[in-house]
Length: 294
Image (cartoon, rainbow, N blue to C red; front, side):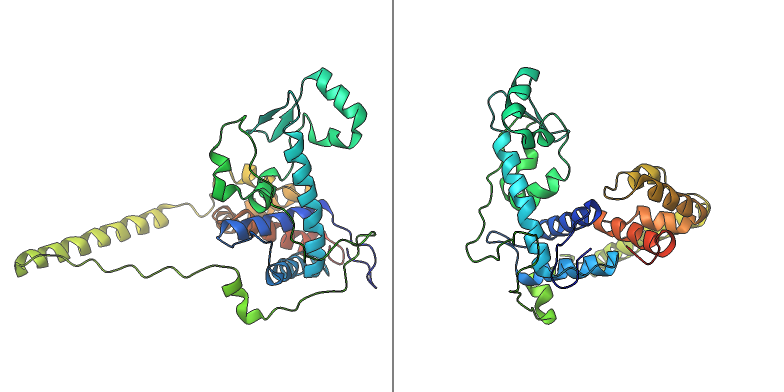
C-alpha cells in the first residue's frame, strides 16, 4: 500500500476504516486529544495496521491521512448549516429538499457525496474531531446543531502534494506508551467491612455472603454445562456483516468458517470492540483468502 522510496501512499477503504476505528476507540478510552494525537499514538496506530494488514505505514502516514478526514469532517459540519438542511442523526444524513440539492450541487459538485446520503464513518469522525464525548453530542436530538470542530495545531506536520509522508518523524519510547495513552489503572475497591458488634451476627453475615457467591458460581457452571457446543449466538451473522471495509464475499466465507467452529463463533461474538472483530476478520482473510497478504 505504501510505495517504496517515499512515493504515493494509498489508503483503501478497509485501511481508513481500521485507522478511524482505532483512533476513535483511543479517544473513547479517555485519551486527551485537545491539541491532537501524540506521535506515540500515531505510531501505535501504524503498528497495529501493519501487523493486521501486512502494510508498511508510519506514524507520519497516519497523521497525514488523518488530516484528510479532518477536512472531510469540517466540510460536513459546514454543510449541516446550509439553509434548509436537516441533520438526520439515525442515518447520519444531511437532508436537503430536491430544489435546494440541485441548486447547491450545480455550484459545488464535490459536495454531492455528503448530501442526501448516509455519511460513512461519521460517528468515528465526530469522536475524534468533534469532542463529542465531552459535549454530549450523541445525546442531542436528531436535528440539533453539530459539535464544534477542533482546529489543527500549528506545529503539526503538513501534507505533501502527492500524499507522500514528510521526512520529519518523532520516534517514541515504547515504555511510555501506556502512560501517553492516558489510560489510568482502576483504583482498587475497598473491602466491605461489616459494622456489626455482635460476633454471631458478623459470622452469619459472612456465611450469607459466601453462600450467595457459591450459588452464583453454581448457576453459572450449570449454564456452561447445559450449553450446546454446536450452538452459535443469534445475531452473529448480522454483527459480522455490519463490519465495514471488507468484501461481502469474504465476510460470508468467514461466517461459514464460524459455523463450522461454534466455539470460535462464540468467542468472536463476545469480543468487546469493533476493532477486535476487524482484526479477527482481517487475520482470517490474510491467512485463507489472500495471495501473499494484503
